[in-house]
Length: 454
Image 1 (cartoon, rainbow, N blue to C red):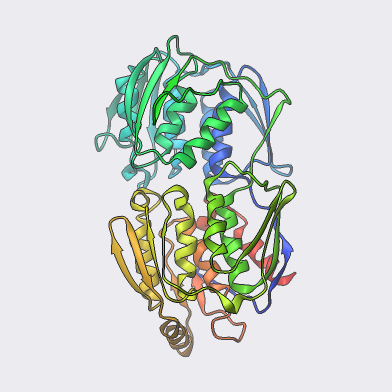
Image 2 (image 1 turned 30 degrees about the vertical axis):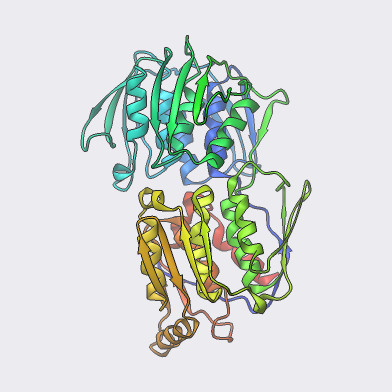
């Protein structure tokens, strides 16, 4: 584990632009879809991080040919027309939720396969039941669990998709439904009907749009959360490539930075109508004074008056863009009044229990936090925050933030630490295990540092 990283505050407003990495969620979806096509697909602007490397290594272990150009951020995938070359393989998904769920559904397309899957200790406790139950109900796979029932590790015997229907419990993760929407039509001889429970539409919308980009017909919407998936043969987009949208979860950190430090920051390659629901986070910050200009040429965020942040009590439901609740929670001590963050119960079962983790770290900063099953209420105590920073400095120390091996804690609290709390431009906060950012944004701290010096 790397040493704690002191965060140097910004002493002036930003005047710069930032080229965001590609979205992890979109990159891993695109890798699955490209593998299912009947040809060669070039993925442009791909994210090359730990989670996408796990997906690439798994695909190569299954016999798919993937060529990566790290300088151009491009990946060429040779699809095998809805088949998998290797009928036996051992796959390690680490703690990558998208890889774990998307690969499990992908494997089910190949009749007669025997696959061993495992992940790290954290992955072994993450929810898989909704997906595994649906695959069993559809007759697409049988599972032999080597530890806890319905969790990794397990051996999977696959039978292919042959039609049928299933109720899909996606309460714990929308990836469970997305995995089935991506894979279940490939190679199926009959339509498959899925009735989903606990859908977060913004995340599923990404999957539905990407299916169509790879040649699938639109899914009929006969009833709410009922999906009828016809047999499909995915194909490479007509232009021969698919461009990965920049990561809007990553954008949230730099939007928050612009709010609290002032200035102007441009985001090239973002569009006025992005796929990702995390675009809603910009509206959350607009209440506090962040100005947004969004066009086909990119986004521009600005705040001329960072000291005039709106400071009334707010209650915000983050259900449809929950990855960004940590960004908001981390800067909450600077917002004044109080905030109640709701719609986040499912985040207890992500990389870590994100609700408890956020409550712990904000309490360490002297904030009053009420933790409930689905929410956090944060009463800001700015004077206590300064007092604790000064007390740590008096003893030659910094306030250290635990990251729980979760990249979003590292990046969110780095933005808080970028605020010049003690008005001297010197660090007052440090991030433990900053290398955990390799999961989705390997050069996050270098990017943050570059904005500080421009």
